[in-house]
Image (cartoon, rainbow, N blue to C red):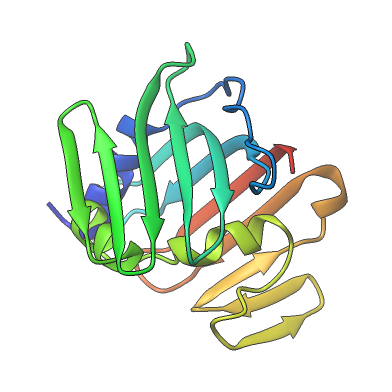
Length: 175
C-alpha cells in the first residue's frame, strides 16, 4: 500500500469525530491540548483521495509526551508515547516500540511525518529544533506551511504541497 494510503488508513482507523475528557494532569505536568483533527490526503495517479476526522489529546513536546486518539464514543483507539530514544504505539493489536517519532511515523504511516513538531505547531509556534521561515499567515517549516491566521479562534492549519499533498486542520478545544 502506498505511503499516502497507509497514512490515511491509519488516521481513519485511529481517529474519529468526538473528543472525550482528557486524563487528569499530575501537579507540575504539562497540560493536555484537546481538540479535533481533520486530515486530507490528495489523490495521486494511483490512489484516491483520503480524509479522516479525529479527536485527540496531546501532552508534551518533541522530547517526551503522549498522544491519545479516541473513537466517536470516547473509547481509546490508540496511544503514542515518546521519550528521548524511544516511541511506543499502543493499539488494540498490541504495543509496538520504535527508536523515535520519525521511525514510528515511517513504520506506521509509510513516511516520516513531523510528529515531533505537532505540539509546538498546535501552540502556534515553530518547532525550535528546525529552521523556519516566517510568512504573513504563519510560518513554513519542514516542508509544511503552517497557517495561524485563525489561532485566536482555536484553529491551526498545516499544508504540505509535496506529493501526496496533505492538509491537517486542528480545532483546539483546550490549550
